[in-house]
Length: 304
Image 1 (cartoon, rainbow, N blue to C red):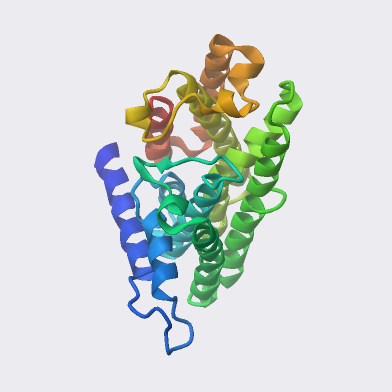
Image 2: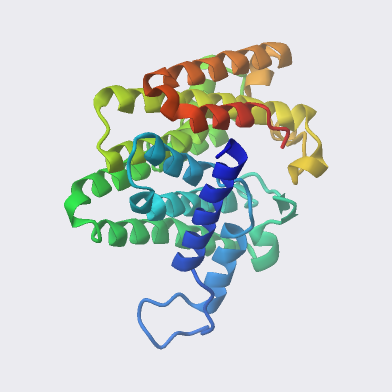
């Protein structure tokens, strides 16, 4: 099987799992406990099922395969990661954050459902992600501890010392003079943490040793940092129609970015270095890393 076919299989699995975990609801005021009200569910599904490459859940499933583990045990954790990622995008787009009107080529959640309901949709997806992971962990009693560790890894890297920390400092740093240390912290936590989380979660689920755990952590960090630099470059040089969102917004908001710190050419050079480091981190896995190598190559060549 080639890379595009395998990627498609992973995405299909993610989509089916998301649909299974968050089906449509009909009752605005459910009579049963544990049922999501219809309007809240609709707004959650609007953003969660809006498409996209499903990068983070694909990473988790691919890491399970690379480690000769069980993708079945990783399905719910992968879907939960997409819920967490989607919640972060809904909140990013709000007027108090990036104030964006479009995401993936269509109106952002708050433009369709209003700011209040968009906040609740994001809150709902974040909390529901943990509900799903904890319920799923109880299904795998023989591997319960590793499921809990996987959920903890995802929580840590998406929480107040992870992605949220990066987002917080990103907001505080608007219109400030670019600083390498501060920018590195922002990128590591705002972006790289949620790309490392699926890899570490998969490592726990599969019982990987410390050497492989460290290799996956390094791969995720390098991919995340390079991905963010490339994203900043796309905001300068990208095509808005292809990207499905407005370009030139970082400069308007006074965002601290790698191009603003070192210039476009140096940012491109740093991105190339990081992609090379990411590929080198996979050496420990040998031929089993064929999909991860393809993943890194495709991501570094993206235009949107």
